[in-house]
Every structure is written in structure tokens, then in C-alpha cells.
Image 1 (tube, rainbow, N blue to C red):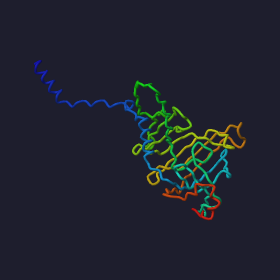
Image 2: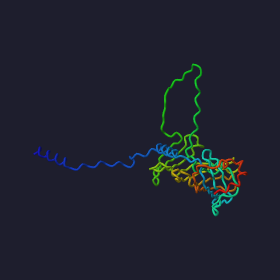
Image 3: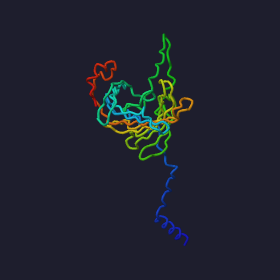
Image 4: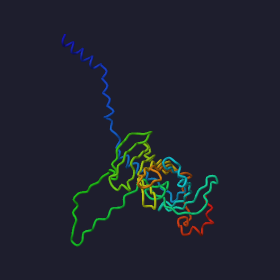
Length: 285
């Protein structure tokens, strides 16, 4: 009887359905590597070939303590050479769909006393090349102690903050050169690794290009001819009363519209000394 019972039990065990393995807890699911996402986003951003010239309309709207600042609100048409960001601008009249009035020179840039841009501006500027090490002289010989390679991004400490509407959300903290590495948060498309949006720090210059306060930029991107370009920027600054009595909160909004990638533009567009003699040629949109 005991032998029959053992055989019966074995048969029942072999014929039983196996118990499903326990599903891993959410906390056990590995998070995406933020450094890999950041490196991929930077590579994808730099892989786009920037055009030699970009023409665009910049509309700036300004508020001080939530009141419109008409004097610092305007719409410009800008013709920019992207290799050095030299540009010519004119006042743009939307009702006439024309750029009229005088010719002016500008070099759009971030973190400077000018409007941010151009639309093709680089949010991942590369570090300058390192200073070459001094070469040994005479009979001196240098011995290689070790070779170190790193695939991690050395500009930022990156933290994965989740997925927001199909985009990886990364929190960034600069590890060096805070004036160059100005990104503080980044949203990267989870499929294409294109940059959708970023939070960056900047400077708002108040007077004489010398007095400035920290500025926070919320930058949105759009694709134009398969190249990511600036689409909209919302900038907010808190101004201490000790610096100005005009207001304590300044908000600027920038809209980049009617973007055109030009293959060529006249050289005189970028030489302000010749604007007077070329004024009659400047019936430009």
C-alpha cells in the first residue's frame, strides 16, 4: 500500500500544472541609464547638418511684474550666417508681411546681452580642446603609467526622473564649467532621441551690458527640414530691489517663426560698415 501511495502521489505531481513564477516587483525593474540617454541625445542633436544660413522671424514679448513692457516687445526679421552667428535684422511688420526700416547687425547667442538664438543654436557646446602637454626635451623620456577611457558624460551629473508623454525626463547638474554647461533638465524622445524641450540657465542683462541677474529659460524645440530648431522660449528672472526699482519679476517670451534654411546670402548682410551703401537693395521680406 505504501508503494502504491508513493507512485500515485508521484503521478499526481507530474500531471499537475506548474505554479507561475512570481512577477518582479516594480522596484526590481531596472531604470534607463541617464548617461546613455544623454550621450545618445547629444550625438543625435549633433548629427543633424546645420544649414550655412538661417532666416527667421523673432517675436519677443515682455512683461514686468505681469504688466506688458511695450518698449522691449518687438518683432524682427533676421538673416543669420550660422558659422559665426553674424546676422542682420530689421523690424518686421506683420500687417505688410515685410521687413522695413533700418538695417542692424547682431550676433544672437545664449548667456549674452543679446536675444537668444539663432534657431539652430547648439545646446550641447563642446569643451575647448585641452592644452597640449609639454613635450620632453633632450634625453627625457615619459613612461605611460595607465590609459583611462570613459564613456560617461563628464559635463553633467544625470538623473533619470521618469517618462513624460513619451519622452525621457533627465535632471542635470553640471560637474564643471557652469557657464558652458547650462542645461538643468532635458526631455528626450524615447524613440528617436531627439531633444523636445530643455530647462537652461541664462543671464538677463539689465543695463550697460554689465549688470545681470540669473535667467531661467524653458526652451521648446520643433523639427524643420529634419533639423531641430528653437520654437519657443519662456524666460523668467527675479530681480532684487537693490538692483532696480522698475520691477521684481521680468518675463520674456520668444517665438521663432517662418524659418527658412538658405543656401546663400550676400556677404554684405554681415558687414555693418556697408549697410548704408546697400540700403536701396534691402527690400527684403
